Image (cartoon, rainbow, N blue to C red; front, side):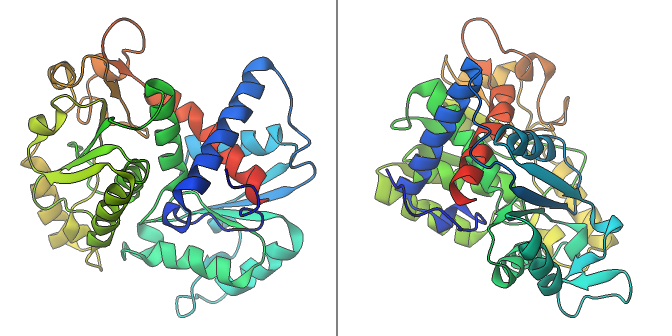
Length: 352
């Protein structure tokens, strides 16, 4: 277990951390979760410390899990709406009297608090793939306190942590677990790639047998796929990509179907032709929905996972996501949502 490698570090991408370090974070999360179950307080860990949260995008789980987490650790989280401050902008994107350069915002908040957490993807960077992650890296470059990635256009590292903690709880470990991350249909085409990319990165890093399923036109970042293959080889797992939705689900222990946007959406500027092309790709695959038939071809004790919010009736049917009790396969989506709280507390307690 690593014990000295976290203080002051940014948490921008899971790829910045070793398998051993991720194991440590999961172990700390389990301890903090046990404390909460027993009613034991741990509000001494970040007493009087401040987390600044900048949300360029809306949030339910992320905002509330970070705010609740900071309260439980003894600190305080400040919610910052970019439209209510001078919106932090990269050099060359400033607009007089409505924005403020990232370097300036970072250095001011650095003097006042103990960490900065940021969510940014899509419209704020004109859907330029990697633009939001570059902004987070720019924040990190200009301040000494940790910068935490609450989801950008490449990675969602905290969601991925919650995913693997949930798998560990349900199966007791990772070896031999068949993890299927699949695209699913949604009428909304504007969905970033961050969740599926972090999900497969973590699953491969932990040595699971990982399958990525999607129709043609829904490809993920080639660099992410290469990293998954490297993780799988190093950890004794496997990684494969397929366009066979049902085939990918056969015997799966983890069934994780979620929509993400098609490749054309990342060719800015986002125009009418891109939206039409993307919608056409989506509409050809309305049968990519997680229903009872799909769960029945998975392992008999499989779990359904989703980062939420899910598009009910499109990505998943009610009888799947709401089946949290009984025999056979079950939905773990709400356990997964709760685990956001515990993994985020673990990271904050380690880096802050």
